[in-house]
Length: 135
Image (cartoon, rainbow, N blue to C red; front, side):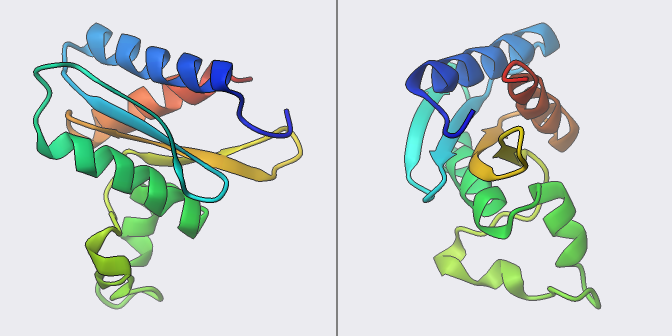
């Protein structure tokens, strides 16, 4: 896979929602393409309003930093090498889990997914379940 197709985006969004249903949580999920533009979005109607922006910003943060937002949080901790990075990009940088980069079989970054609405662990689980369907 060279790029994420519209069909892939639909599968990613649907699988993240399906995983959240299995977990009993209400989420928003967003995908961004390799340039950081929003390529897909879906949410439960009763998901928290803040999850809309957080899902998009988690995907954006994972893409532009080329690592999951959970890992980014470790890198941005006080005393760590990227401390303070979270204060950049006009407040869009998210440094807690739920944003995951998407790479093709050659390892090239082709997009990212962001999930918000559950605990950090649940958001990561929904994002990873979605990415697994592309393999």
